[in-house]
Structures are given as C-alpha cells and as structure tokens.
Length: 244
Image (tube, rainbow, N blue to C red; front, side, top):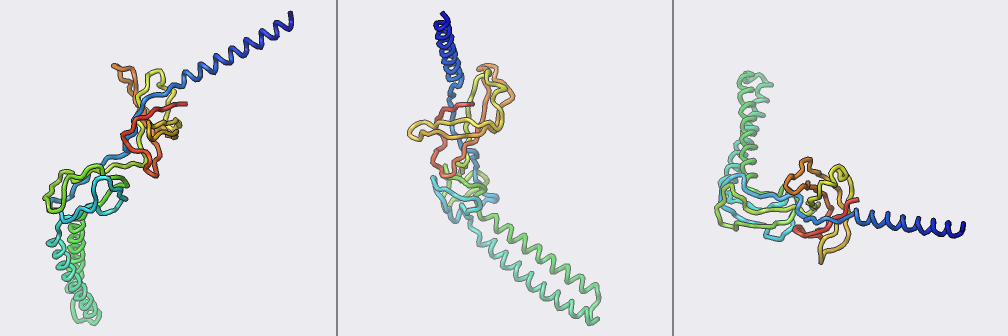
C-alpha cells in the first residue's frame, strides 16, 4: 500500500510539473510587430536656389556630415573673396596704425577707429562664409536615401529634396493587450523574430511603453530598439516578438 502511495504521489507531482511548464509556455505568447527606421528625415535646402550637383541617389548609404547636394553659388563665392580681400587689407592697415600709435604719430581715437573697422570686416567675412555654407546640403544623420525628388539644374525652395532614414537602430513597433500593462516596462529585453527570408532571433530593448490604453481595442503600444549595425535587417519587415 505504501509503495502504491509513493508511486501515485510521484506521478501526480510529474503531472503537476508538466501542467505548470505547459502553462508558462502558453502564457509567453508571441505578438505581431513591425520593424521601422528609428528616424526619417526630410532633407531640404536652407535657402532657395538651383541645384548644381546631387551627390547621392535612392538606396545610397550616407554618413553624418556627408555632402548630399550643392546649390549654384558663384555669387556667394565672389562675395566671400571680396570680403576676405577687404578684411585682409583692413587688418594690415590697423596693424600699421598700431605702430604709428606706439610712436605717438596718431591719436588713440584714430587707432580705435581702425581697430573697429578691422573687426567689422572680419565679421562681414564670417557672415559671407556662412551664407556660402548654406549652399551646401549635408546629411544630419547616418542612414540610407529612401527617396530623391530633384536633380541637378532644378530650382528648389524649402520643400524636401530627398528623404533619409536611419537603419541603425531599428524601431520595433508592437501592440499588446491590456493584460500585459504593468508587466512590460522600459529597459526590459525581448526577443524579436523577423519574417522570412530574414529570420533569426534578435534581442531588442524596450524604450517606450504607452501610458494610455486604446479603449476601442483594449490595447496599448510598445516600442523597442533593435541594433542593426550591418544593416542586414531591412525596415518595413514584419516580425514576431516574445516578451519575458
């Protein structure tokens, strides 16, 4: 009788353990998600003008600070040359007046007047150089060109010339049921499974958890950050996600 009781108890414990593991496996459900660029930037010119050169095309990867396009700038370059020549001349003149002042050949008023004129010329040169810089359009981020609207010779105003998307990291957007509210928190790591043919298992960190529940669907949104340094995972890919 005792041996039967021990065997029965052991079998009961194994059954309970199996049910517990089965319950944990079912609870850890995967949810549908979408991989998106972490940033999408519309690139436009700071000043209107005619495009002289567009250095990139759709699909090109660019680095932060890389030149994307330039506007025709012959007038601005001439203005820089003119103000630089004037600034150099005024500086030499001010230095000569400084020597004359030390020899008591001119008044302090005349010396200060030339020194002020030299500083003004330097500021005018800096202004001309900054206006010239506005004719060069550079990339504000690392990313890929996903759209290009204009070509060389076209007039552009303040509308976007091209669109740039950051592919590292990627944002993982997922909608989860309200039952998960309070269990999913910032900083937690989840597993992301991109759809085929990408596939694989990737780790992502939760960065945003919506604090407002959508009453219509009884769900809330979660965003994760997925490192993608080699750009092997394309944005726009469907995925599945498993929270701990």
